[in-house]
Length: 145
Length: 494
Image (cartoon, rainbow over all chains, first blue to last red; front, top):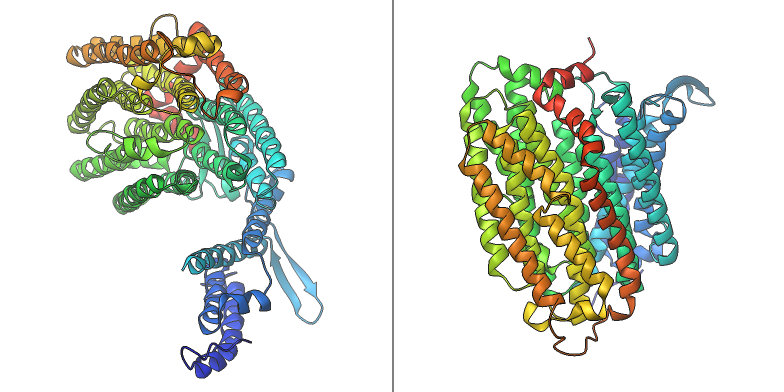
C-alpha cells in the first residue's frame, strides 16, 4: 500500500484503520441481521459499512481502495435496487399484494431451527443501495478536487 | 388482478433498474425505455377501464390493512392522470431519442426520465399522505439529475436555486405531515378524511391546510411562490423542459385538488378564499409574463402559470361542475404544454435563438411544423372545439353558478392573453420573411422530430372532439371528490 508520507506522517491512522475497518464491518453485519426483530437493518448496516470504507479512503486514498475492492458502486446500487424490487414482486406472482413477505421455520445445518424471512432479501437490497450510493457520492466529490 | 394499481409504478422502475446495468448502451436503452413506457401505457389504459367498470381499485401494500398499512388507491382521477403522464412521457422520450446526442443520452438520461415517471405515477396513485411525500422525493431526485445534466454554467446556477427551493418545500412538507399526524394520529387519506371533522379545534386544521397549500404551491408555482420556476425551467433542454412543464407543476396542482377536497373542504371559508386569491394572483402574474417576454420558452413557461391559476380557480369554487372543468383542463394542459414546449424547442434548435426578433418565415420551409404549432396554439387558447375550450367552459359556468363574477371573467380574459401570447409566436416566428438562412443543429432532424409531436397533437385534438365521450369518465373521477364517502368506503372496508 502506498504511504503518502511526504505530506503527513499517518502511520498510526493507517495501522489503526486496517484493524478498525474489520471491527466496523463485523458490527455492521451484526446490525444488519439484528434488524430482523430489533433496531437495525439494511439502511443502518449499509451506512456503517460505508463508514468503514470511507475510513479506508481517508487513511489511504481512492486508488488504494479501488485496488483492494475493485467494485463498480453504481452497479452495486443497481443490483441492490433489483434485489429489493424483485423481492417485492415475488408476491405479485403468487397473487398476493405487492411487497407481501413470506416466512417460515427451517432446520438449518449447524444453526438449528431458524425462521427465514423474505424481508432479509429486501433488506440486503437496501444494504447494497446504501453502500453503493454513499460511495458513489464520496468518490464523485473526491475526484473533482 | 389485485395488484393492478401498482403496475404503472413498478414497470418503469424495473425497466430503469435494468437499464442502470448498462448506462452506456444508448441504442438498447432507447428501445427499453420506449418499450417499458408503451407497456405502462397499455396497463394504465386497462386500469382506467377496470376502474370505470368495477369502481375504485385499492391495494394494501404488504397485505397490511388500511388504515395501518400503506394503501394505493386508483380512483378514476388518479387512473386518468397516470395514463396521461405515461403517454406524455412516451412521446417525450420518443422526441428525446432524436433530439439528444449519444454522449448526452449515456448519462442516465432515460433512467432518470423513467424514475421521474415512477414518482409522478406514485404520487397520483398513493392513498397515504406520507407516501405522497416519498413519491414527491422520488421525482424530485430525478428532476435534480435531469436539470443539471449537461453541466452548463447557467444550468448549475439555476439548479442550486431549484434544489434549495425544493429542499425547503420538502422540509415544510414533512413538518405539515407531522403536524397532521400529531393532531389526528393517522396518515391514510381516507382515515384522515374521517378523523379531521372530529378534531376539537378546527383552527389547527386551517393552519395545516395553509401549510399544505404553501408546500404544493411551491411545486405548482403559485404566486408568490413561483419565483424559481421561469429561471429553472428556461435552462433545461427541450425534452426535459417538456416533461417538467407537463408533469411536475401538475403534480402540485393534483395534490392541492386531492387534499383540499378530501381533507380541508369542510373547514370553513378561510381556506377557500385563500385558494381563490392565490389563483387570481397566479393568473395575473402569468398573463403579465406571457405578454411581456419575447423569448419563446419564457412565453410558454408563463402560460403554465396561467393554466395553474385557472385550474386552481376551479378547485377553489369546489362544485361538481367546476371540479370537472379543472380536471378536464388539467389533462388538456398537460398534453398541450408538452406539445408546445417540444415545438418551441424545435424553433430554437432550427434558428439557434430563443428570441422572436431572430425568427420569421419558418412556415414556408417547414409547413407541417408551422401548422402543428398553429393548431396547438389555438388549442391552448381554448378555441372551440379544441380541447382547451370545454375545461374553461365548465370552470366558468361552475363559477357563475356560485354567483361569482370576477373570477369567471378573469378566466375568460386570460384566454385572450394566452391567445395573444401564442399568436405573437406564430406571427413573428412562422409568418413573414425568413431573416436569414436557418442552419441550427436541429434542421436535418426536423422531419423525424415532428412525428411524436404531431401524434401527441392528434391525441390533444381527439381529446377536444371526443369531449362528449370522455365526459362520463371525468364525472366519475370527480364524484369521490364531491362525496368523500365514496373514497372512504372504497379504502376502508368495514
